[in-house]
Amino acid sequence: MSIGDDIRKDADGNVIGCPHCGARSVHKSGFLYRANSKKQQWLCTACNRKTVRPSIIEKSPFKVEDIDPDHIPIEDLIEHRKKQYKQKAISKKSKKLVKIDINVKGPIGIAHFGDPHVDDDGTDISQILYYMNVINGTPGMFAGNLGDIQNNWIGRLSSLYGQQSTSAKESWRLTEYFVNKLNWLYLVAGNHDVWSGDGDPLDFIMRDHQGLYEKWGARMNLVFPNGREIRINARHTFKGNSIWNTAHGVARAAQTGWADHVLTCGHTHVSGYQVIKNPANGLISHALQVASFKIMDSYADKLGLDDKNIFNCPVTIIDPQYDDDDNRLITTIFNPINASQYLTYLRKNYNKLKNEKA
Image (cartoon, rainbow, N blue to C red):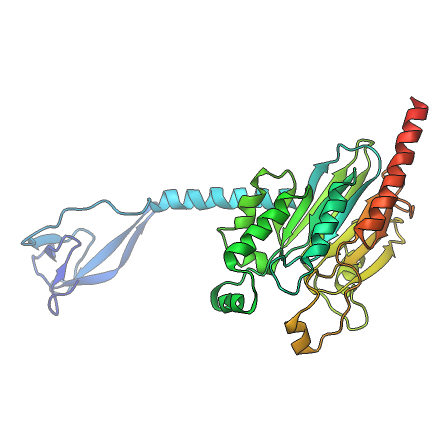
């Protein structure tokens, strides 16, 4: 630190000078490097000699006591960052395909809820409740959710609560009721859900549920008692759109690398369905774009969007006795009511055959 044209001070405020001639006219002149060290080098303009150990010419009139820093040493911080990255990498790898052991023998069904928006005035809450009762009353049927359980208006969007009759508090009460009344195989958070940030109430609500909860998407490997494995790829949305094909994004995923039996998503509030067969290995993939329970939507009306809501809770029924290229392995039914009847029929036949063999 300079206090004149040729006067320097050290870190303690002492005036330093040349150890050779005693002059105060020293200034920094690069560094002196050794195998394991790097030291500041000083040049005296009076005698033109260099040093790495300048003399104290005049002591500072005072010295402030060193205080403990409010942060951990940089070495500890680096080690913490390394451990944190390692743990995140392990976690990400484990989420690429999450194993779920299915302990139910025979056929099962998965009801995939499209964006419920349970607190919106335009949502058919009666239909949601009816489907919940059907699912709960059907042995072997599980639930999945593709995101946006509620509107969850936050920040500058909070004013939109003024355009619906449900308050923010009531919205979370409805959300908790919806989540706690079903046996979830998986639950995916959509863009409305993740607006809550790190303090995610859904994560807290799901704490006592056995089902998988993930933001944006979850890829699962269902392992049945007979050893059969079925892959489910559920996301809030898959990239890609087409005005000619509402299932374009999810079908594109099935055709460009995601070798899964069921791929399903929500977000766009439209319905679409494609069945795709991989000619290389015979795998039949069911690509489902699921609509919403939000039937009346002022935003869609404003943009002039067409009504393409055909189904908002399709059920994929899995009969694990069949191979990947057999169209009886997975049957898609567009509503839980008919799906319940068909699943009940399949399970009745399965149990009958099992008893006959016993």
